[in-house]
Image 1 (tube, rainbow, N blue to C red):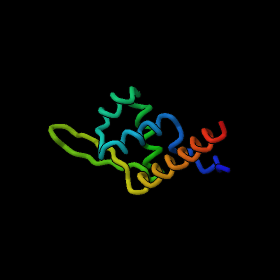
Image 2: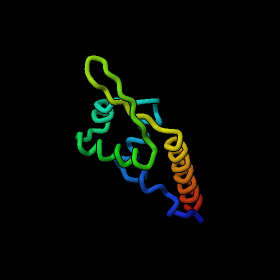
Image 3: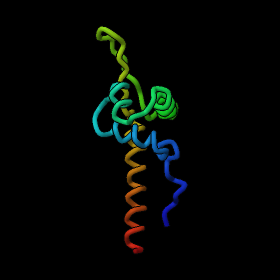
Length: 100
């Protein structure tokens, strides 16, 4: 039996799951790129990013190239948490399809 309480509630929220997926797909994303791809407002995106930073899943890298650019990337613990999250989802899907 799968323990659904093990689903990481920080990642499981739709906006944060989207961000984690994007960050896992390539090394780093600029704030504006994430905003454009996810079609989120500045406030919504920064709130989700702060939630992910608070638990240590996301870090920032700031660069100055004519203007200040903030890039976001997964931390080691963020990569581990996302991998575990996906593993639990795979178990859920496998169990659900075997019961059909």
